[in-house]
Length: 129
Image 1 (cartoon, rainbow, N blue to C red):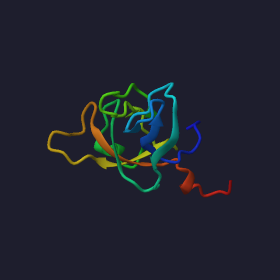
Image 2 (image 1 turned 90 degrees about the vertical axis):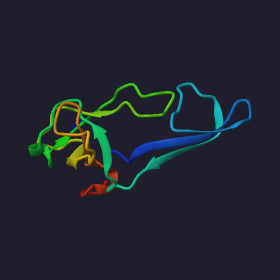
Image 3 (image 1 turned 60 degrees about the vertical axis):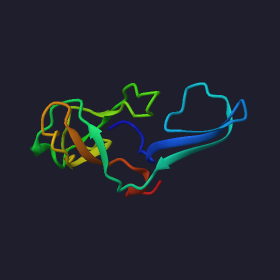
Image 4 (image 1 turned 30 degrees about the horizontal axis):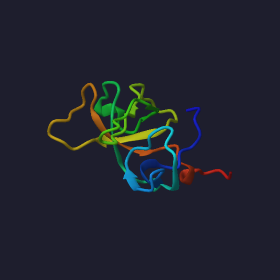
């Protein structure tokens, strides 16, 4: 993939708003004026994440890699809008598919929920930087 290695996944933010109130949120609104800003990031390179596929994966895609697609998240819940690209291959990409998310309502079908690792992670870099 052409993007740079990732450090992790945004988990939330805390800050002092312009009115002096303390805010913790899973969502960082664009244009926020604040101080004492702390961003929380899941940075362990071996965390298993759940992500929805933008395509129709099959069991044979386990071990393949795919990039993420940025979508519009929810300002209400803080839920991410990212999904896994439907193009999966044995080439290098942002995420490595390690399985199907364990849920009775989930299956290898369109928009399946998958378990992935960040494949292109700065802490997994094998060459020096």
